[in-house]
Image (cartoon, rainbow, N blue to C red; front, side, top):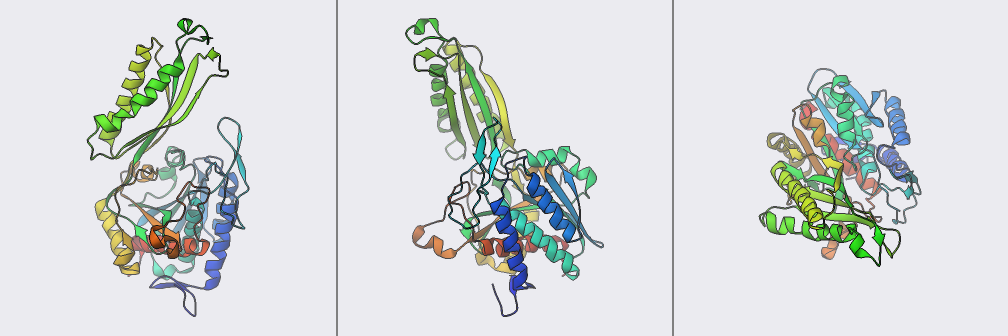
Length: 415
């Protein structure tokens, strides 16, 4: 990775050590100052300031989203997305640049905030990519639309940017690229044609009942009993209504009811998170949830429950021909041993909205930023959304920027 004169991002592109150190500093700053979804105000200002310092024009889109336009003569137009939001997690990495930030949750409460999914690495790599392409105009030709997207964790940001006129205000690309850091060794890349992530839906379900004294259950309609029956019955959807070969998950993540042990409350509330591989399975599973919730309420003589959609993630689908183009670039730059193929995971991602909204291909890949020694003897570092998630700062910058550069130059490169 390092030579006597600098650092190789790809075999053809070397940067000075000082360049890497500068963007390690950018990464550490971003890691120490995370913000929750749709609250990325300081992050957006930081990105805007950095782009302005590079001489790159930008505009706000989707609230706290930032779009930079980098032009270099004639050539294709492509988009490159980096998401920017953190998570409500109390960091436990022990890093000297660990986050001590807090944010406000939708219910008004205060929560610790951490870049527990690595979006700080995505921003740093995208800014380093912008700096490199601005300085090395001989490498490429065309237009790069840099999309710094808020609210990925809540499936808010990509759709918000599209609804705010992203593709009316920015040049329309022929492809939208995106990447994500994962708990893999530095130098490893995960990409394939077809689905790269699962569709995801989250609902809040309120079960209505009739309040009564705990000693007089006959005067109540007990929403806790009804909701509990729903929770148990929901677990049969995947095991009894889908083929065993179909990957899907139905998870009840929260359950709240009552204020006192001797009062049967008038309502119970739970939230459900659903992961499905395709639109047909999504439709079937969501319809089954509605059917079960309604039927269990009727069985308890309870009113029809109230269902509120919290978020919905689109498909994250790699157009096969476009994915092959990027795969070929990765293989040429990093070798076929760097490429990992793995089964469909149950994680979700909203980058697909950016490409699907205008009917162009999308290509999404994952890169590793962890010391390979952490994977010896079958071990692995903490994964995304863990309070211990800690990519190596240098590997994140070198690996993330190198992968981004290789993918972008697959479309914009001059030879």
